Length: 520
Image (cartoon, rainbow, N blue to C red):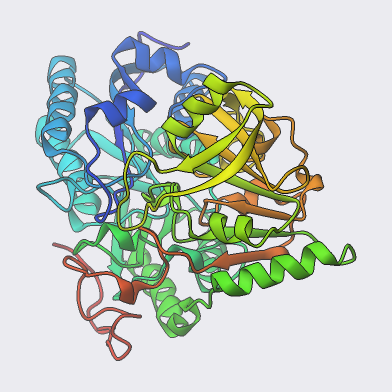
């Protein structure tokens, strides 16, 4: 570690993707995932396997490799996607960060590992508030940069009060480490004299996450175009970030956003920013998505399991994605598959701590009536019971193998694989900590081989594509129209904060191309 000399760089972050329709995220939610303060943050960032955001570890390790520096670790905490953060807890974290910064002045830079789509119970833009408060302490000469998820909702405060925003380029997210490395290299360049100038456009476009994949489609085209044009300009552009936003945050800051940061020339930044935004707007109709109904999914599963010549399929339980704030315990799709007697189904993962605990009490091979959601029903979390056998138990501690979880510690809590309809029936993974099933380890951790299933169902919106690509090509993926807090049919929700008019909710909305740049 290169400490004690070089630039003084503070490290901090509060990581949350907020679904405005989900329950509030409190202190216990953050501490149950990760909460590190002071030197413990630095120690965690330097570990090979950690629970924290991978980009923080990548930033620290890259700074260590590229020269002397003095890290000033403040506070980093994060929880699973959930509802708005409790504002009192947010303010407590903010005050702790501010106190560390005040005691550590002067600082050359502050690096923030953020998600960018956080909402609090009192403000729609806590990410911008965090950056603004840090700027008040450090003053204009300190460089502030942040890495962001590409589902970030970008505000003018986030852009104006920072020097550089670096968002992911991939969805499913598999480039967190490269983005942390990029942020470190960019900081070295800026501290050596580069002059970041940023242009920002937010389109009146709030697509669902299903259309924000980066392998192909309109969003992929925007990102690819921006990266190509950046390379063509030979170092004049420091970064191009295209953030699709997270519509379920339901804030005035929602909308596909383009941020281009140039070295020394605001005009260069604005020209490229406008090019990318115009490309996205001209292709806005391509952001619409057709889903598969539950009834169609069951029929397709029946055909697939009857005909061994047909390729196996993977279904996304799209309305209940814990990775977007979903409860992880809706039953419509799993009940339909069990009731229909579909064989060779792997279903992951159902969040039900009470059911998992009962399976652990009974032990492996025990047969019992498994009751889902016995703790009480909500609008989406309905109860149902079916006869099951405890196939396998696990403590739920696993290291991710593929996709966004690769090399990262995944804590599922006490978990169970339950078998319904006898051998070769429906196997449901029940977990005690809410997670989206984006990695094969959710099944492999119970000794299951993905290739043995004819139908795999995951409570995940899109990140599962990177985790299950060895078994399923894009043509074998179906997004199922299930009810839930992440249902990708925007007309079903009562929106309060979205900027209106906005596409696709308002098909006739117009975009002001004459003066598109957001400065305040």
